[in-house]
Image (tube, rainbow, N blue to C red; front, side, top):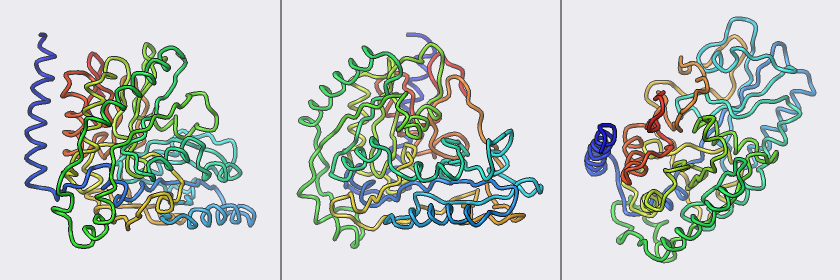
Length: 394
């Protein structure tokens, strides 16, 4: 065994021990399975739609923005999107807005850029276009709608399998994944005493579903070239990074809760043991009730989650951010939001998925992701600051 392998295993062992200590001593815990707690009580991620303008909006442009805002408000939780008009050209840009706008040469103005949620701690761009394209952006794609429906009906996770050009590899991954998940559905067990550790309000809701919970997984194929799924595909690819030699490798991504992607597995990291580790985490007790301290990144899902979820409960408010403050609902011209000073990150080879500020998960999320992908002794493409074996760390 080489020095790198030994060091990797040592990191995994250290991570597991520290994460266990955190789970029992520093965070609230309960026995409700992670997937159910996430679906029931975690809010969907709030994406930022920055509308850059170099002049006042025309009446027609105002109407388009109002229609977009009304469409979001019709959702049970309008927090899935925050529309932020931003004036450019007057030197007022700061923080994330300046980083997103830097180098932009839009085809028209106003110009919209969809950016990951503030709690991610980054300004990762996943879509851009003119106001005429907003209606299409705010309509859930076929795969997003199907995925959200399956999660709302109680699936512990929906495994997205992204095809990236190699049909045979993609088909083989789907067959293997479906077989492993079917086996896990019969072998894995839900936690006992699910009401333990819950506050009275959540316990009264949990009493309605504890007897009905079952372990179910679903698999959805996703094509990298599908124009209807551009935002979903781009979110996955921008977060995992790409390398030339892996460009045709399919990617398996388990999505849980209200559209939270846990980890990305491909190549040698796609193995039965890593699949089982991810599934065990999802059906195991929720050792940390705070969404931001669990592994994963949010996917943009403009859907009415409460209408889709059986026995809907009220989502808890996101934890207060430490450090960068949340952006205001509207950024007025010459009144920049007081946001993170971090510029938009550049895309680099070998980049791994990151779901929190400083280009990495909060500590509990990092450790959980290390456990999920590393416990099997493999190098995974994780939604965390893990790096990739034999690749330059970023």
